[in-house]
Amino acid sequence: MTENLLEVKNLHTHFFTENGVIPSVNGVSFSVKKGEVIGIVGESGCGKSVTSLSILQLINKPGKIVEGEIRFHEKDLTTFSEKEIRKIRGNKISMIFQEPLTSLNPVFTIGHQISEAIRLHQDVDKKEAKQRSISLLRKVGMANPERQYHAFPHLLSGGMRQRVMIAMALSCNPELLIADEPTTALDVTIQKQILKLMKNLSNELNTSIILITHDLGVIAEMVDRVVVMYGGEIVEENDVYSLFENPKHPYTKGLLNSTPKIHQLKEKLQSIEGNVPTPDQLPSGCNFQDRCPFAMDKCRELSPNLVASTDGSSVRCWLHQEKEVVNV
Amino acid sequence: MKKYLVKRLLQIIPVLFIISFVVFVLVYMAGDPVALMLPEDASESDREAMRAALGLTDPFYIQYFRFVGDLVQGNFGTSFRYNQAALPLVLERLPATFELAAASMVVATLMAVPLGIYSARKQNSLVDLFITGGSVLGKAMPNFWLGILLILLFAVNIQVFPVSGRGTIVHMILPAITLGTGIAAEMTRLIRSNMLEILNQDYIRTARSKGVSSNILVYKHAFRNSLIPVVTIMGLQVSHLVSGALITESVFSWPGIGLLLVQAVNGRDMAVVQAAVFVIALLVIVVNLITDLIYRLLDPRINYS
Image (cartoon, rainbow over all chains, first blue to last red; front, side, top):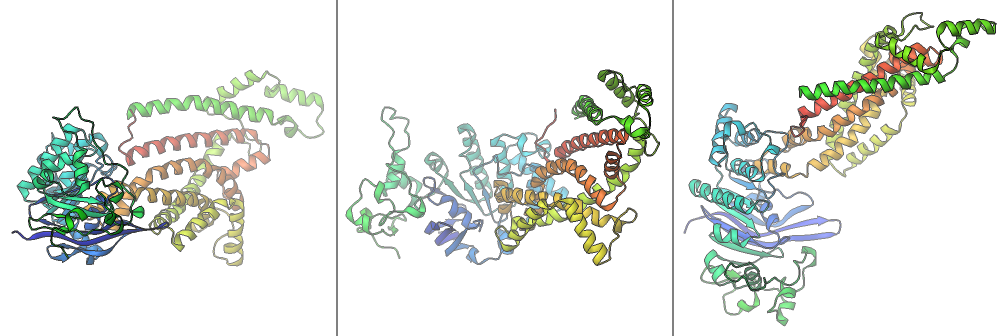
């Protein structure tokens, strides 16, 4: 078994607002191996993005990591100084964000923005950085990269800008790429291209990817292992085939049932009743109990633990608790 | 770009016509200049003869066309007071006013940029509160009050600066501070609020995720974006600068166009008033045009075609 590149252990990220503490992420643990693609799924507000921003210490005030470790190559990133973490950002671990339209600085050319990332982490002169940027633009499939190097972001389409973001993120051959809903804002056809591009490049460079999305179609296509989040916690983790084949947690089942299937057009599309609770209004007991069709009395009183089974999967649900070994 | 420039320059012509009309009407309504020109014991027939000689008995529109006809030749008439052509009199005062305006803009920028940025970076801190409060105060202080107080403090009580006049750089400091403070206050508040908004933008997060240090983040990625509205305000402040110059130049006896205008109004020297108002209006128009051109340099999204 290959070593873990990144290990998130018991991460708690809370937001200290005027209306009290909002626990956005509550005890999340997962790991990423070298070259592995993992997916984090969940509805909006379940803590996916906060988890990903926490990894690079990009949480803004009033948010703060209050507990937990983020081990990258065995070193805990939460203990790093601002200066040390800057050497990781964009270099060893880089990010792609959801909004390609607003994620590039409007007053600098895309070439300048890619070159800046290169020159921050590599000891090269301007000319060399420019050459590398142009070859990166070519790599991500930009037509006429020499000319596009001088283009301002507003001249490019959303898909093109996301390609620029990918070029920028991959400019220093990172070991880990965190993609936070990279295709949500794009057309379906463009989505497919961007995902393919990410997959090819990660295979080529052996980059691990954390793909954050609420789109199970994207998950099925891209990832090796899936982490399902709900209410700031992980509720289920499994390899992608087993998860789609045999979802254990009622929430995962709900998510899969609410995906349209091409062969069952007549059926009415199912949805999970109710809304995602905001982190400050989580119910007592299991976070999912008030939306769960299988909720028992026990679920309303006690919160279940995340339990790992021997096949490498784990689930946080009383329905699966008794049969298996408790993970401490 | 060239097309845009030509279009904008052509647009100035009708504006100048409107200004010429306003300037003319103001003076037309201001009263009978003959009363001031002749001695008090002049007879009514002498006055009539003078009016006829000056063309003041002609109908309004004839007088206006005559005024415009002279104006396009650069002739605003003769100043009673200086017994010289009015336009050259105004133009020779321009360098002094430019000097003061430039100095106040420098003072304003030197104060506003660091204060605004610092205040935004330390949002809600005590220093931020102090700067924000100070900028309200700076905006609220009238120029003449601040000017007189500065003279009292730094020229009378502690004699480090001259009371008035123009000459060396030292003469410029107090008037520049007087004129620059209000502008600095406005700019500080604007830079602060812009910076706060921009620091929350997605592209700032992107830059941080690349490993950009917080200083470069603020001074390169955010500041350039925050400059666009600041340039707008600086352009608009030029008209403020002119009205401020009237007062500040009077307080400090600064021999610029503002002081000339105030003296001309007091002395009913109408040719000079007309020439000065016209020149000031033209300046404001030109500065606004330059402001629009600077936008383009700052924001590549703006396209003037």
